[in-house]
Image 1 (cartoon, rainbow, N blue to C red):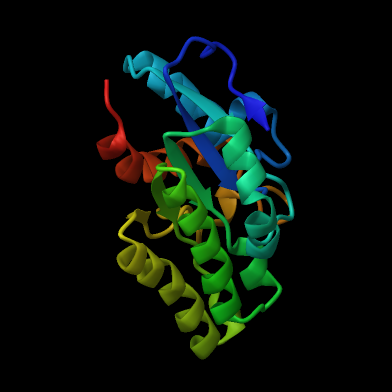
Image 2 (image 1 turned 45 degrees about the horizontal axis):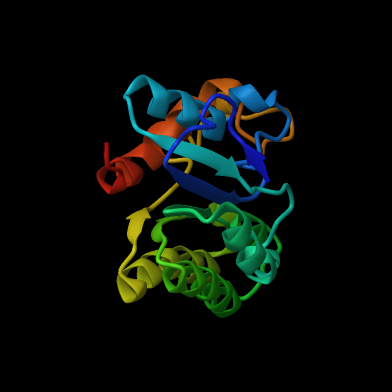
Amino acid sequence: MVLAAGAAHAADTILVFGDSLSAAYGLAQKEGWVALLSERLRERKFDYNVANASISGETSAGGAARIDDALARARPSVLVVALGANDGLRGLPAAQLKTNLGRILDAAKARKANVLLVGMRLPPNYGPKYTAEFDAVFAELARERKVAFVPFLLDGFGDRREFFQSDTIHPTAEAQKIMLDNVWQGLAPMLRR
């Protein structure tokens, strides 16, 4: 888990719990949306530490297995959950994704952390039935667990090739600000000055 530099005296912690999309895969850490979040918080005078517990390749099952330790270490007041992309790319059952994400949300709520769930969508080549089931998981969980929700981390550019690295999966440095803006829509109302 990486604490963002320059926020050592912050009163509360925002823990980002995601996969390579939040781990700045293929980029310098300072270019990723999580580092940009730390900068935005400082610029706007929010007193928060940002901890990034995102791991490239992480699935919802891996996240569910390590959430208790991550929460105990960071003791966040806010947890941003941005997992599920790797579940979808592997075609894992949507019900399994929902169970695993539900476990993560429940663990955070048990520790009195406010939660922002960030959704993911799949490209249409996974078939209409699976993509619909997968997409629905995030909104259903947010509604059922009464947590803040951002529908799609890659909103505004997910279908634009120029915003992706050569692997066509991981966003470029230019896309990171858009990702931050997407997360910020759900996160900003949760923050106190």
